[in-house]
Image 1 (cartoon, rainbow, N blue to C red):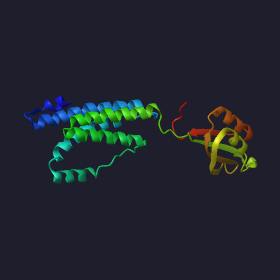
Image 2 (image 1 turned 90 degrees about the horizontal axis):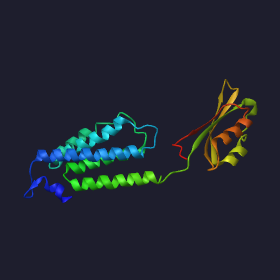
Image 3 (image 1 turned 120 degrees about the vertical axis):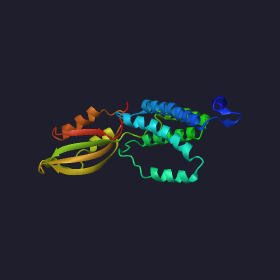
Image 4 (image 1 turned 30 degrees about the vertical axis):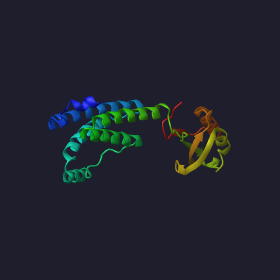
Length: 227
């Protein structure tokens, strides 16, 4: 990778600050595209935002230029970061992993902006590999938590009405909410459950429907359901 730096030096001195800045921006663009490709491959939600992908690329490029400006002037650096502190994201980040990708892009832009081209390339390749390995092996996956909502007639209201069914089909369960519906004629129970590995959703719902007079039963997942 020493050859990369040699392209922009002559007798050990930088040829042109402008050309070096262009090189830093170009490298930040290429590396941030790699970052966003890894993000798209490892994304596990329903749909990622195209604007978020573009933002990672643009932030990386812009930060590379900012680092050119502030690297030799501490006063300017403090002034710019004071301005940046006033900027807030208007859209909420729904996935904690998205924050890591934002920081990833920023770090690559900063490294490229300081002309540490080899380090920027190594950082991108190594961190991308880590992200992909964590995704591929599903590292740190917790047990799926589900929300079970069951409606029962008021005359069938009983605190332990579904205990035996839940004991048979779940690893654990806890009641989260009890509320009245239909002007008090119905009761809605809300449970947080963790189903057993061999439990089928259809089997659980059918067992509850036999107990609650075939009224409404819903089962939703807090995270992404994976086979």
